[in-house]
Length: 373
Image (cartoon, rainbow, N blue to C red; front, top):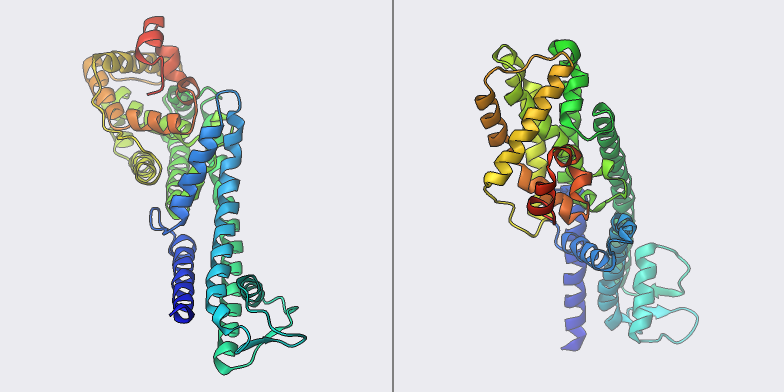
């Protein structure tokens, strides 16, 4: 019974690892991994538990640690599965050419690892046709997994570099303030909406690319940098706030911009990324209806943004009530989720939303957003 149980168990284990490699590297969609998603979550929670307010920099190592843990897990489980298949064959179909063949499990693990890595230095060799096919299959599996993991690493860090470049671009466009009103003031200075539209289109395209990169490689969510300018929550808040201000603060003759493809693309891409992140990363339910304090705060934010746009020579809507209502409705759709993301990544509210922090009165600071949202 044991003689047949080991190969069956080993085959199932190897199949599970190969399925996880396929779903993580080749199929590459968020939430489809068998082990990779759970392992990433486990490593993140472990590092988050160790990191305190004084050593949050430890979270910067979480992304690379998850990559290393994932590769090690695949390698160890593949070797373990192959060892379970090899173990009953030691001394019969697989022998040592130099001496008597040991039949312990450690030897089986060594033979399996050697056949997977195709090192070629082992004195153990197959003697039967089935064992020869097993060694050949192991070598194909080992070579394929190594090739796929190298490609996977290159793609992850390529996508990470693109995301960081986008975050830095948004930070620079906002004059290093993290304020969407500043971003729009520089894009549309002197009411040159058409001139700034091209830059807005480029930004929308990059946001779409970043969204799909995170859907392909959800492990990117766990790459957390000490500098908040590289935080997804901060950059996506600026993008969503910019769209909200375009739709609420600009006058009716700018309806072409409000309904343009670039603005629609920015809005949809940013919300889609946050929805994806909510499905694979967040633990808390982001649904939350704003209260009177939220509405008052958002109204003040919209008023300050209108004044900044006016100071840049940009025309704003005359109807204050409609402007405020439109901004509040837009903000309601994303504010809670963005702040949950920032809190989950251990960023302070002031780092994620500095523009809103400048809007708040001391009362709001102490009563409304004094803690994590």
